[in-house]
Length: 331
Image (cartoon, rainbow, N blue to C red; front, side):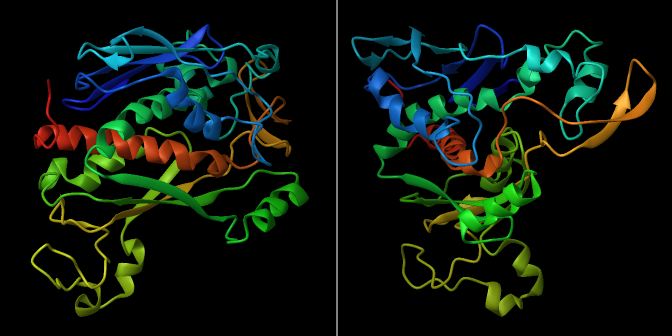
């Protein structure tokens, strides 16, 4: 539901247009230096209005520490951090209440929760909640950095174009939204993280990755291209006793367990569901299909803001796996 992790466990809360969003992080080792300034870079990367093609909604996203941090360091107790919502325009959503927006959780949430859900800005289903993931990722990145583990995500393409501006221009010309592909690469991992079957590295990362709104697919290493390869070509030949391989078609994971090579995976980010293009949907009040267009402030391409979120969930997963293997001292 709203919690993830075994030893390093995050619980998120809040709604897009509620008073705040935030998270509780349990299992964080004591003694990790944490300051408000540590969050600035990644929270800025996640914000809308910073890059061309992102929503003009901008929040300050200054973390408010509620517990678990004392004298600038983690105490070992649960860490609670809030982010206030100040730049909301809830009226934009009142007019759409009777028409579930295609691609959004409006219909499923309405049915599941009997109409009691907070529908403003998508409520608890909103990408606004990724602020919590990014902030928790800031803490996780600090922990894995102690082991010289670095995770980085980049946009590979937008709308099928490696020239990102060209891909964005496609959507601009069509007055529509567009999707993209983002790749994650993590270096410095030890051999042996993860378990076979249900807690494989791929399984746990995929679980976390699909908590990011708009993610519709994932592949590790060669991914779907492996379907066209011969086994002798896909197999990664080991070239030393450390486990280094000549190729990395496995994406750094074999048998669900890290093999010491770079962890590589890619995700598909769907086009933003909120598009200015006219669409049709069922109207609960009139009991008929009607044409309408979505108003408000929305991203032209969600993929632009995904890299920092992908880095965060990767770091969260790896911190949990490292703790489970006791690669990090828990004080």
